[in-house]
Length: 277
Image (tube, rainbow, N blue to C red):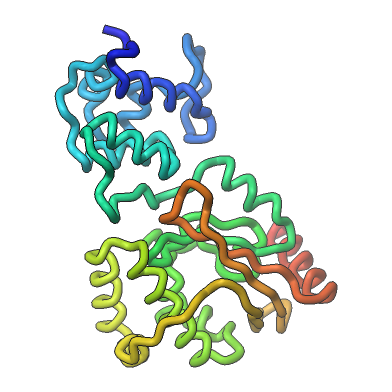
């Protein structure tokens, strides 16, 4: 049975997957009868049965669980508004607080990052996992792509990564600021269990984090200035601003702009150097 107006969940899912570019997700561009991802490709990305997902679109898969809907939302790269609509269609009730699709960003948002040629930019979750970055960020801040996924976390880098620590001109001030700003972000938007797990792990491996966390400071991370001591380019000055991603309150974007033309030249040199190695 095809998705119809009476099967609003199926129609919504079909409409979302047909808007996605298979090439953006690494799927072969073989001959396709319809645009977008195939049902089995969505199922693969969501780690659900292809048969069950097909039934769900056809209106005969039974009531889905919240966990399954969350995985499907991630597979379809839904915005927060779309995620909330999916839960209303699938479960007949709003999404529970803290159940968000934080992993990954849309191809459009990645293109926004990539357009900032000389401004390092990252996208982070409420627990400060870095889930997207641009070429300038990889050259100036950290090459996140070379790190295991679990280490792409700003707090883990500041407290556990010797190279990131050495890059700070005043590590203790930066560490205190990062912890205080993280506390404000995490308790506003992150699931409590995720915050507790991260804090517990960092407290175990870093006595310095444990001490600073116990002081209970809270700060805004809106904007400011930052100086990094880069091992190749030397001292780089930048101004930063933090933004919430529209439609994704679970994601925050931080953009660093070079403070002076000289800083811009240093960043350009680093990017060009990285491209040639």
